[in-house]
Amino acid sequence: MSPALAGIPLAIAAVPLGGYLLLLGWWHLQRRPIVVPGAIDLALLAAGVSGLVAVGPLALLQPAVGTTPWATAMLVLVFVLIVGVAVLAMRPRLVIYNVTLEQLRPVVSEVVGGLDGSARWAGESVALPARGLQVLMDARGLTRCVSLVACGTRTSAEGWTEFARRVRRGVRPLRVRRNLWGAAAILLGGMILLGAMAWSLVPWVSAAAAPIAVCRPQLPVAHWSAAPIGQAPRC
Image 1 (spheres, rainbow, N blue to C red):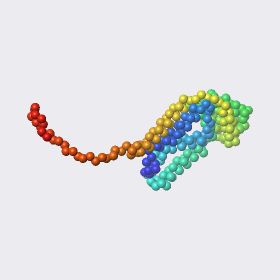
Image 2: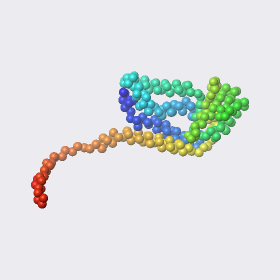
Image 3: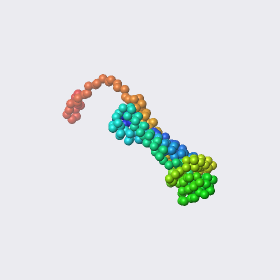
Image 4: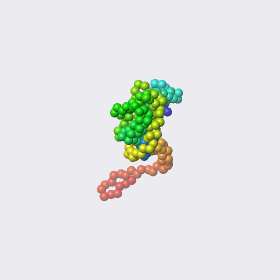
């Protein structure tokens, strides 16, 4: 297998994941919600797991395609293409971090009312017939994260763009409490990065601490002969 993939230590491969966790933790420790487009959210997740994918599935596929640098580049390109296709195929969405469904619903209701007076709510979804848009509010429980997903068979790109722009503007004045989950994510991400740093320093520390061979004269070992009790032994 190519050293570029199989030779990557697991601690180093986890560095992107550590950075991704630090970013999530920082978002959750803000005093206001963070709005991220769904495509960027998925791309950030793919970047976070890219190191683990490289030393896992891609390294396992390496023998089938060869061990040349071109084969390694092809595997990485396949992963990038898969992520790109997933981004293009996903429904339009907005991901709002560090907010609850109860805090976000009044903002969405105000935005919907301003866009379409004939909008109809059904549970956590709302239909905007005049804008050719249906939106589902999907909450993620303890992480305090809500996704606004465009649903329905036909979604107006113009209607979704205007809806997303108004939601971003409506969320800005909100002030929320910091999420303790963010502190846990920062702690875990920091531990991963510190572990990777320690792993990278191991060769340098080992080289610096290598014992220097010192030539010492070999002294003869004295052989003691047995002596009767009460007498000193003879060499």
